[in-house]
Structure formats: structure tokens, C-alpha cells
Length: 151
Image 1 (cartoon, rainbow, N blue to C red):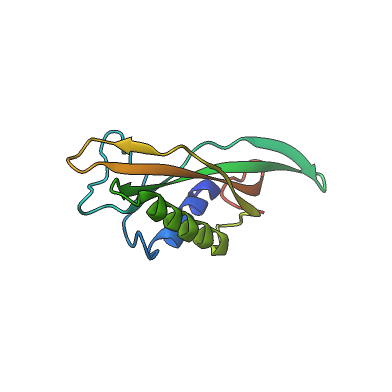
Image 2: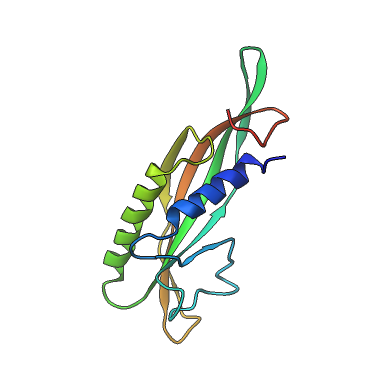
């Protein structure tokens, strides 16, 4: 049995975001950075990625019960809090947007950047870091009762 389409989309996004010019292989999934911040010396600049909720609506198409799903995908960029971090953050946003737009995300019909969260500064380490979440909405459809197959 295949994974839930949410899992398939998240894995595809993780793959698309690994190897970007600024963040390279420093991409982490489901990492609670409030508990364990990225190491400024070895993991920054870096990205964290997580699926974060999914409103759905039952619709009928050709007499089939279909779920229209709007998955929230959060990609958070982490940079060192030195001067010029705004420029670094904007460069990472550009690379993330291009990578997500060019990726095939497991049956997703549409992917939209819906919000840039406010930047947050972490003083958890000797070297402070700044992080900012880029929130995407991923539209996809499944037949009711078959969440592992995208339409």
C-alpha cells in the first residue's frame, strides 16, 4: 500500500528543496527547532519542512465522492543573525519558490505561497539565528476512502 498522499507530497517537497544553492543538503523534516535549534555552525543556513494541517471538503464528481484537500506545507528558513540577513532570507525564499514551483508534488493540482510569517530571532546559541516560515497551500484530490491515491 502506498503512503498517504500528504506523505508523498512532503517527501517530494523535501527532495525538491535538498541541494538549493544557499541551503544545500541542510534540509530537516519535522524538527522542532524550539526544542532543538539548528546548529549555527553546521546546519545554518538551512531549512526545516513540515506538513501543518489540511482542511478538506467532500465534493461529488461523476457520482464519485471526492475529497478536495488543501494541505499546508511550512518551509522555514534559518540564517545567522549577522548584518545582511534580510538579503540572505530573500535569496532563500527565491530559491524555495522556484524549487517548489518546478517540482512534481505527488498529484498536487496547485501549489501557492500563501503567507510569509514574521521573522523570529533565536538567542538559544552563542550565535543568534533568524528564522522565517514560508507557508504554502497544496491543493490535491483523493477519492473518499482512498487517501493514498491522488486524482
